[in-house]
Image (cartoon, rainbow, N blue to C red; front, side, top):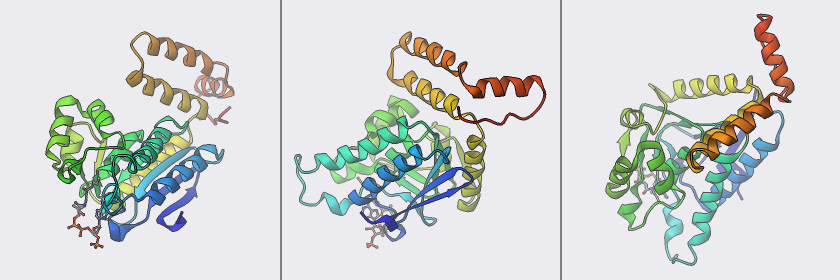
Length: 261
Ligand code: COA
């Protein structure tokens, strides 16, 4: 594991995780993916961290996909752990109890796009480009792209992107719902993502976690079960210190100070 290939910094309750291989367009080799998993776990288990930003170093790439040099000489048996490693990372980001913002500062291709799709919120700079170009290598997405992409943009659009391998620009990604917001420059993106992350730090942590779980269940559970789940976790929030604080603050016209309890 090379710690320098991924940077980790905490400011005001926001953990920023930066993929740091700019000369290789932040390509995701095995050690980067493994380190990302460790750092997301660190952020999730650190009580001083309440929201997370994932970004790429430099102004060219968020991540230009899995490191293609690792594909050479691999077959169906030896490549399995590579896909499983990526999928475990994506599942962890998606299910961890804190919100994760992808600040997409350039190319988000292949595994880069797939990891971004596992994040809760995607903001991008106007130079960002998105795509699942695996078909051009004779392979298909393996970090969850064929599953998460259609859920975000619809089956028809996902098929066009995966079959063609074409890249789309940030404004088109915004139009089809792949991302939430576009900033003109990378600097503005980083500021905007940090402002949003700091806003989320101030929200009640238990309610945030339960809202994330319930929203994720909208994708995975049949209607009825997910509604029952929402009632259960809605009720749970009423046993928290933060619910007492939030309601009291509203009624007394003051700002709530949440304790995440
Ligand atoms: N894996 C390994 N190395 C990668 C990479 C990847 N996914 N993406 C980029 N790189 C490396 C290049 O090999 C090059 O390294 P070098 O300078 O040592 O030769 C460096 O990053 C810059 O890339 P380059 O192709 O020279 O830049 P470009 O501006 O012409 O093109 C991309 C940028 C992103 C369009 C192009 O690099 C690309 O298509 N990358 C692969 C994308 C992909 O297929 N991802 C899915 C993998 S499953």
